[in-house]
Image (cartoon, rainbow, N blue to C red):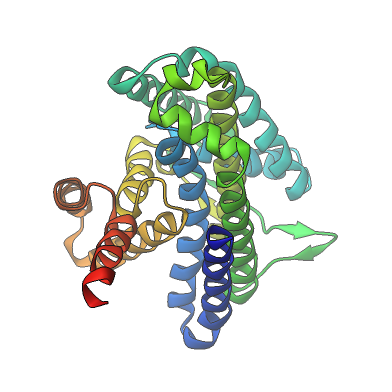
Length: 316
């Protein structure tokens, strides 16, 4: 019951913050940053289910993000598909690919798993660069406005409403999944795969399912981001973007849904603050990741929560 109350208290607090932000952020630039934070947070929450709760490393998730983005761009531009159909087609193709590679890849562990997922991401990135007749190659491709029932989503306020709703939905889904038997099975796998198998958990099935889930969420978010931005380049499917997503998970907090949101917020805002130091973002990302792993190995939110809990008896 206590866990249930905490879960919905956090979700309610997030809903209140998201509702108040458009009132506070009257500048379109700040609203644009808020939209990007929300979309990044959706991907990071799903990636945290894979990394933080199941203990499976992925350094190629930007490839799935790029697949969704380019599926929407290519199908709506070259084949005149409705945006929602293109989005679903991209998500389905990503899900099929993730399912096809999940079992062989997820048999690996540690750095070999990281290298395998990195290789998958690189293959997707190369394919996007080479298929220039569909993707525009290194020059990128324009993406038409997202329309649903002949109504176009336009303007920062409309897109903020969409991104905030997606973030709330993903947060609610993740919190419920974690407290379900499936979530407990995922956490058991993280603790010990051998013990999980002895307890009757089909570890291969659960790892494959969460891998596919996180890939499909990345694809859907990539499609929505592509329509919002209006122009995409292969960089969104590149290695550095995958590292950004992993850094958001680690900095915010492994196995923490709200930590994912904090990590996404911090590392989405950071490049905006470093625009005058072009080219140094990679160095700063590396320093932040190193500092977090040294001083707060569990991430910001879990570490702060642990310190607050440890102080309560002393105050009493």
